[in-house]
Length: 116
Image (cartoon, rainbow, N blue to C red; front, side):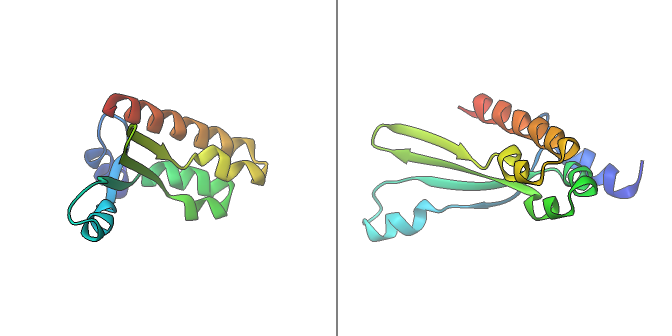
């Protein structure tokens, strides 16, 4: 196992994903509203090893190294949305990259379902 792989394996959770960065996007809106709703959190998650495999098949896939998820509070409840990696890579027509992307989407969906 290489050094990068060891670091990543140690850093990912049970979902095989790691958090790269988080943005408290709702802070800007709450400032305008005097501290009132909404609560909104944007998480950028991924796995560099999965990105590496996608980029071998489709170099452009490296620009989709991470998935953006948004958790936001609305009047009707909390909503969770994310960028589907398979939909981003489908136009390239590479089944090998699409298979990896679909697997990644499944990991993200399981993580979001567990969080919900």
